[in-house]
Image (cartoon, rainbow, N blue to C red):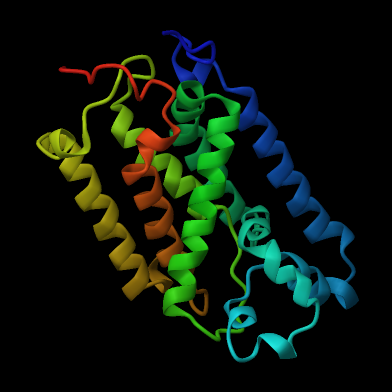
Length: 230
């Protein structure tokens, strides 16, 4: 069985079209948010597109645009606080999303992005019920790409090891420990990463990462082939 989306060239020299398209969309949305949305309508812009945990609790009925509750758990991923926030997510998407896109193909890759985005918000909602602060950023999706990419072990063409077997690899375990350690630091001391007064939705990182790591085979087009024994 072959996947037409797989390519033997290194991802850095063969950027998948879906990665390029998502990058352009994220930049375009940020340009609109930064330059085209008048200050008088900025709050409405955020209410319409950002994910607000309070919408799903007791305060939900008091917020305008109630219909936004149906789609903002996905649309929040397209909005970023500033150019630094956007740049970090785009760079991580280029690095970790490219091999995953080559492996999965466009449709499966976008499905993983959506799943990671939804899981990211779900984890954030669990710890921030009734919070009025809007949640924004593609971190949930990007973290899902990271979780999936570590399962690939830099090989986009061969079947991957099972999850239990992967945990026998020291490099695999070390990456996960470092990743969770970093996010624990982000959760405890966000000012070290983002500066004073800035909150980081680290729960979204965890939700997305676990989605890519644990649900990899649900999206993998090669999941029915014998596992790699490398």
